[in-house]
Image (cartoon, rainbow, N blue to C red):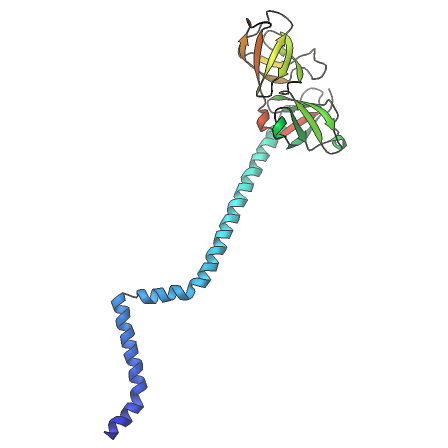
Length: 245
């Protein structure tokens, strides 16, 4: 008996550890290691959580940068298209960005980021890819305000390219304007091209203005001809200001 007690005291720790290991092995085998995997996930979760959050932030930042690159590429194409326009005879031009437009006068006015210190003057003609935009109505040292051809108070002397018929084009606060002719029976047809007239005192001759989309010569008290402007004025972001002419 004494020998057994001595032996137990000497090897009891080893036996207990061995039993625990065997029990743990049996549990792992029975559960196919699920408990160990859960324990591992529990131990490393705080570190993985921080890493995942940082990755989401990096992904969001990357997406934002991609959107900015796309916007810059779009602006670059717009500016390149503007600068690649063939120069008008005897015309110098200043490239300017549109910096503001009021929601209540979207079709009447816009503000440019160039002013008198850049050479912009009152009554300077403003063009964009597609043709005529309007004319400068006021300037500050760093900005200028443009009266658009779509404004109802705007009047542009025009010529029908095909027939050389002349008239006055007035805006109506949308993508089109109305033509008024001096003749009672003007020679005008649908799809006729409209340009600025040689008789105009405000605009150089030959600038593209638009295309005839509707003709009603029987309308009273005067014929009505609708012209769709060639410049998509609702989307203009860059323009050229003609400094002489």
